[in-house]
Image (tube, rainbow, N blue to C red; front, side):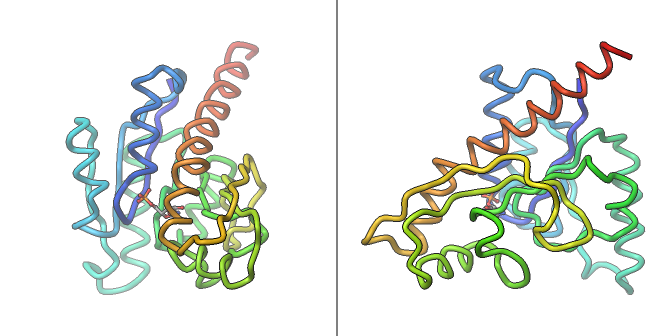
Length: 203
Ligand code: GRF
């Protein structure tokens, strides 16, 4: 059973989609065992606690230097002995050392069809504002592996979502979450876990 850690900063609806997928049996080869946030008031931590999952807040503002924060973050991740790290709305840039150590085992959900509307400053509602400003008729979500770049790692899954003429950033964000993010992330985790289990069977 793959040990999964989920890093969050906000409401945790993507985390909830993963937990619901475990419950429904859609995810059967992986289990969320740890949730970490940089934001003590992230409702995602409440969702983790309600599900009986170990969770904590490690905030950059609690440390003298960025290096101290990175050390604490890495120590927490190592302690949990995770096989897969999932960024579900986590808004803090990971230290390169962590990306090197977990290369190929960190995935992120982004609320657009990368390479559109991604990179610096493209997060949360801003992504949908950019899509509406550009006038695209189709947007969606992307799950990709995380490397040292910003939203540049290998793409794992994508799902398209129609943009409606009367969409606001909020209505578009909601549709992209419901129709794409909450579908893709659990599937990407199960695909990853099943492939790992098959590799183990062959070994
Ligand atoms: C979502 O919009 C996701 O696309 C982005 O951050 C937001 C996280 O939402 N990465 P939630 O905390 O999972 O509800």
